[in-house]
Image: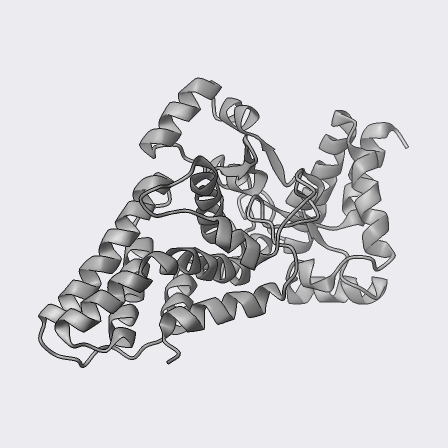
Length: 329
């Protein structure tokens, strides 16, 4: 019988498509580790039960970070993987409980998934990953016990997919960076956009990073960017895109490295590596960590959010104009 555990596994396997999967930073192409297993191989190696391995706990921490900090679609994917990594440890216990209480095992497993998701969405982003793991497992068992002890086999029929989609949506914001205008300085949004781009170009020129930005600009103008990666633009910006024949806008984070080392991230917020490590163990570190082998990295976008650095949308023409002014061209 296909229950919620089976549906979760089927969904994850379908999404992975038998391709190599990166549970370190989420993208095989940018990961420093060149060899990646398929999801099925990865799942078979993970040990999150009583005999937890260090490698499994590090992988769990990375998957937690990806499920918290990726975009909406990727968050749902990694949350499904998070659930699927736990279900092997619920299988035997749910069957035993069903036999003891003469209950449908599928209902018990649905209650366990519901309890697991409730734990996930009730815990803060700074919760240590090991504590989160323990809490999710405990809440799964508590949910199952609560179901059978209630004395009724009628349970919620909502699927895991429904619960995930509903809860994840609440974390999204409809506010776009392009809609934030400093009205105290510039009243005209079009002028604000150009000034923002020129200031960015001037800064990049002074830092000696403009050549790197121009590589991205050439990629955008030649149409080599996946349009799914292009930022949404305002109605006013559509007119400018019509002139170019394509959407050339990009976010500042597109020209920055995707990840930086743990020590550098700690220094960015005024901490030493040892201080940051202690805070990570206590769950008080403001950013989350991704493990690549024995090394820790941190998402640059996550740091920008913590430091209140706006990931502005700019146009290549404005950025290059600002760089030209500083360069005396």
